[in-house]
Image 1 (cartoon, rainbow, N blue to C red):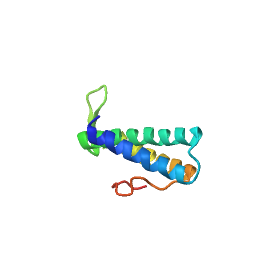
Image 2: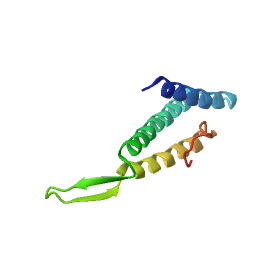
Image 3: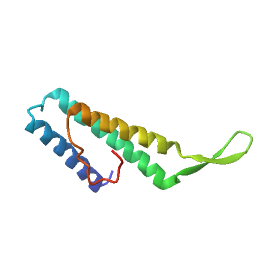
Length: 105
């Protein structure tokens, strides 16, 4: 993971923890939920990277040698992860720390 990505994770974590502190909810339970949110963020970034690398459509080949294009499974997985991230923020009662992101939260 590059330095820029590590810094972004640090910035997101600090933003969420600051929101918890300002509302008096910076307990181990909520801090663990913030870390779970960051796990989802990392997962979403991995899906984003796969989509950038392989594209929206990927070529599949079956055992008989037949090939076809299908939607990259990372597309649906990324959408599902984004929904989970939004749900996690709602559970925490926090605002999106990545409001400038191009994600559809």
